Length: 319
Image (cartoon, rainbow, N blue to C red; front, side, top):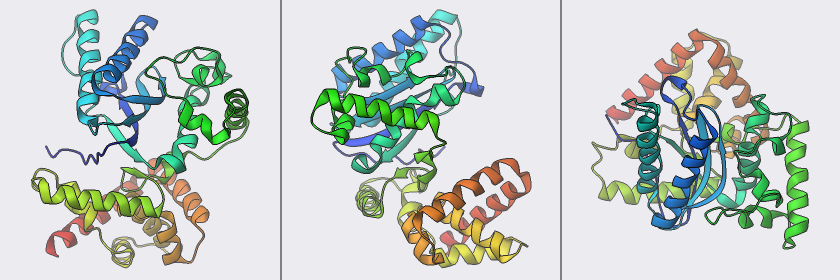
């Protein structure tokens, strides 16, 4: 089984998620949650991991993490491995606790950390677990507002700096920022992830692409096929051509699928797609978000997407 694409460098920021196997719960008590947090602390002490946010749900968790030492894999092996061992012993079970490998999204910190912080903290509200974000104790929100002392391994300063240098005023404005998210149906920043691995602007994509090219020269490409695929992606025109060949639909449907595949599979930024189709970036984002929901509900669309992906991969091999 090929390893997933992991881009790492000193000071990288990631949004990390891991779900329970078969979507089963991974936290059955407050003791479990405390134990998991203790592994975040030990990851900080051993490997220098910094956590800019977290939220522990019933069957998954979210982390906003920084890796000063370029050691994401070691950090996550420690956290998930130690917690799995603890949980299996407690429950007298064996085997996998988590559903496959963890998912990591490489984040452009200056552009997206604030929105991701809000997204993470609002998870319990969106899930209907609590009405107000401050009522959920198993996230880092109360550390941000000063209602609970931040743990040594928690870093709130970077995100709060978006609201100014005065800590008290920044906490108040952050609280208002979160409350705005409770009232409004705000956009999920993860809808803008490209190639299932990058959240950032076009300049950040270029930076990541350069890092990947450097990795290609050092890595065994047969073991990490996603590396080569990401650096030699199909052109926007090629994607549109393959979609048109596969789909027996009108031009509007072809355009919608082409734009979504260009972002989700091709890894193109919203601005790149917008220039190709004569649209603003926010319009592309809205269209792709709606189309993603259509795909989730429509089995026939899912088949078409898989066929487009297969043909793009075949054409990539031929070239």
